[in-house]
Structures are given as structure tokens and as C-alpha cells.
Image (cartoon, rainbow, N blue to C red; front, side, top):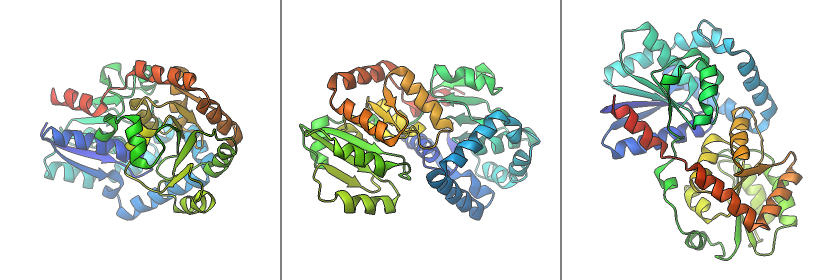
Length: 370
């Protein structure tokens, strides 16, 4: 394996983050890697529109997102070989096929099911012999995988094997690797030192709040309830991501409160996680995996459902997270845990027992043996 093409899809940052983590590790091993949004091979304008549309629905119409995901789960034929969606993607694969051949890639890795469907179609209908792999970024199988069967499918844990087999993927094509995270997430800083770097009191209990790169969900309501009952020794770090409107609103409301740290988009997520004692988040696949690597107890707000509901259930059953139905109840759960170091310690121990592997390293080792 000398030259790898990574195919992601800009529908949220999770798939891109996973692909970037793989790319970073592979580059360190001396492998040439390129990362592309697979939609760019269809149409750059379409890619921009789908990215915008996904962000809009995800942030403003989560119920519609959930309906669409559930519909695809119940009727997988909508994405199967011969369906309108499959045929549309299949009819747009020639540009991707030519690129793979001309650039002489010897391996193609997909971190999104659209990319996997397109690569699978290329392998079925042309003489191309490049090995293909799919990497899951959530703790479940996806409806789109009913339509594609790549040589290798890397998944989060042993507990997801049955779900992928039910999607029609043979067990011998499944490899448990863990979900790849950026190398910096694998580095652990001492908690007090991390707090000092971020301007958080060393002896405080720090609650980190982040609802994905788009900053979606009822963050303002939850934060209001938390601030009302925040323990005296506690501080809150709120990461708004790319949601500038939310950032400006919270900055106006809490800018003078020294206990509340309002942050926009930042490249210091790893440092904020190292400083945190508790993490309030939506259960995105990358977010929860990064927290698991950091042994960071979690409180979930299920803002979107879909595949994130499976992520949430995985860590709830483990005993490493809690959740509730309403913003007020989620805030109450968070306050209870801020008051309970013993319970937080129990949750940390569950995460240590889970022992999330280095996903990118495992994927490299498997593919390098081919």
C-alpha cells in the first residue's frame, strides 16, 4: 500500500474528521494520501448544495432528518442496486473511476456510504482492481450499506457485528478497528495543566458543552438551567462551533460571567476535553469516540436521533453516559453529576474498561498486510 485515496462527504464534519485522522496517520507511515469529497466527482455545485442542505435540516429541522433516516432503515430498497438513488450515483461514477486509474491509487477508503456505493458500482462494472474499504463513523450500520459490499469494512466494536451482518455484509469482511480519531486526541494532558492553559481555575469542576461542529440543539435553554444551579466551585466551557449566531448571543448574555467561557470555532478541542470533568454533547460518532478516548463522562442531548441514537444507546448501556428527555432534565442530570465525583469516577472506569483502540493504526495494519 503506497498511494491511498480517501473519499468522504461534507454532510457534517464527522466523516471528514474520520478521513483526516486516517490521512494523518497514514502520512506518518510514509503512505501518500489524498482526501476528496466524493460529491465533487458528481458536481461541485451539487456538493455545495447538499452540504448546505444537510446543515440546514440538521440544525433547524431535526425531525425531518430523523424521519428520513428511519424511512431508509425501514425501506432499504430505496438505496439498493436498481433504485433511483443508486442509479443516479452509479451514472456519475465515470469521473471518479478515471481519477482512480489515472492517479494510480492502490487502495480506496470510504468514510461515507455514498462514497462506498459509488466505489462498489465501479468495482462491479469495470475492470478496476483497486481494493476498497469502508470505515464506519457511528456505532451502527447505515441504510446505504445494503447496496455495497467492499472488501473490508472497519467498524466501531464487536457489538456492531450483528447489525452489519443484517445489512448483508459477510462476517469475514468485517474488522473491528474502533473509530479513527485525530492523533492529538490520543495525547493526554494533565487536567490541572490543561485548565491553566485555558484560563479555567485548577480546582474547579469544568463542564464542557458542545453540540457538534455546527453547534446545533437547545444549547441556550440547557445553559440557562445549568447556570441557575451551577455549583459554586464549577465552571462551564461552551463550544459553539461554526454557529456564529449562537456564539454572539451567548457572548452577550454571559460575557461578564467569569464562570462561563463562551468559545466559537476552535482547534483546541483536545485541550478542552483534557480540562473537562464532564461533557454535555449530542451523541455524534466522532464526538463520543473522542470522549471515550479521553475517559470523559458524558451527558447526552439527543437533538437529531438517526444514527446518533445508536451511539447514545451504546454508551448508556456501558454506564459511561446519562441522558434525559427535556433541556431542563438534561441540565438537572448535569448538575447532579457535577455534585457527584464518585459517580463521575464510576463512569470514567467504564470507559477505561472499554479501552478504545487507535482506529487509524489498526486500519493501516490490516490494509498493509494485503
